[in-house]
Image (cartoon, rainbow over all chains, first blue to last red; front, top):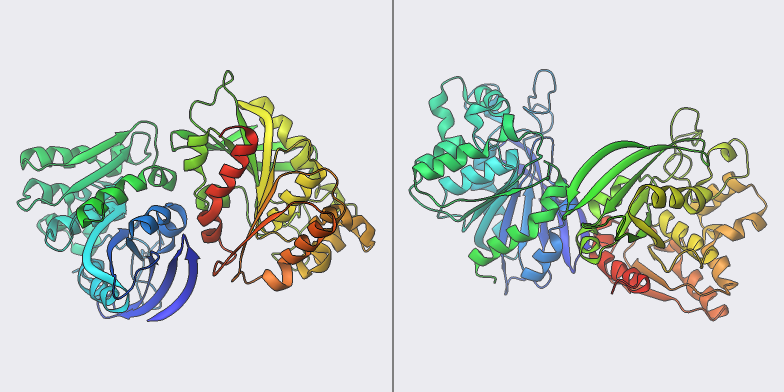
Length: 280
Length: 280
């Protein structure tokens, strides 16, 4: 691991690292916030935050305003990048923002040329946690959250791994990617045209057949410019009704898709996860 | 005024506007945060925030984490841009970050070609407040704060106008611009080589001859990469001792020049200003 930068913040430390990933076959960057007093003797649980389209490891750390409460709660936060990057990593043919670089969609690609590097699902669930747990004063206890594409990632990762994460939450998630333009483009390219292979990466599909309950909290703004066409939280609600799964979806009048929305409610999510981590 | 964007945040509203400035002779952009329930019947006081080199109206609004407490206190925040911009506005000959665009230094330039547009002192003190007070539900009560170049701006504006602002604060200010590379370059170009004309724009010079006390709070990180060469808070302290002026300078072990430092202590500054505004 290579340390890229270090900032003291709220008594804790914000660190950025790069490392060679054997899952994505390229150099990956992540950020971690360690609260004050985290030590090998007193390790802390970790919230993983998955960011949305066009983002990298920095958007959440700089804009969400999460560090103050994380510092008080004694919770680490890890923010991975949103895709593989670097020389040799293929991108959207036209450089579009919604596919390729910055748009890994948290899947393991099975179609060439994407399958060599675009394995973000395994990177987030299999490679990154042991690395974090080996290098930093954290426990194995973890929760996962994210925004938009990252909200989709958090929901599918949480539902598919209910024994690995204590709780899952999302802001403005792409809740039914099999049935929206962003999702159809990404899943079609990464996974191919057989929609059967998409189901494991669709929160509404997973929710409909949910058997292991994981505590789940979702926030959505009513003025979100992507609400109707791309996000479709109602699909998730209907699926939860079919599988009789408990889901808390909070609709917020007047809020949009921006980090101003995330910042406005991030503390409720930290408290939700902290409760399931036993911190409060 | 032209509305550029609008986001709901913490129950209040974050707005960006552009307008034609008669002081800087160009189109200027600013952001304003209005807390919930601000109305013509219940107008709120305003904190002006002046940003540092390379910044615009957005850095503070996105990264400082100030909106939550401002919302609770009932305080508006106005973040102007850091220089004139647009076609015909001259820039540093080599496009350096520390002079010209994004680096107005909150002075009224008296040297050609800078004097046509680079009149940020008058823009902040004379043009912007009446505009804000005419268009938004705010009172005439105001405080001023800023970071780095903007900390310099806040200090000189506060000390030169103790009857217009109830309090002044700064993070990592350029405290003695007559005696540091950033300040010498900017003041030399905007004001010319006669250093007598620089005194009105140098916080340490103004502090040394301070007669009207204005409540003042300054934060500084000890690991700030610009501390020794550019910022020189000790000059401000020595000047305060000479003029027997009260100055609170908090040195913070391990903090750097970034917004992570500002975010860590911004709430103390909001509370400081709120106290002088009579909000708490």
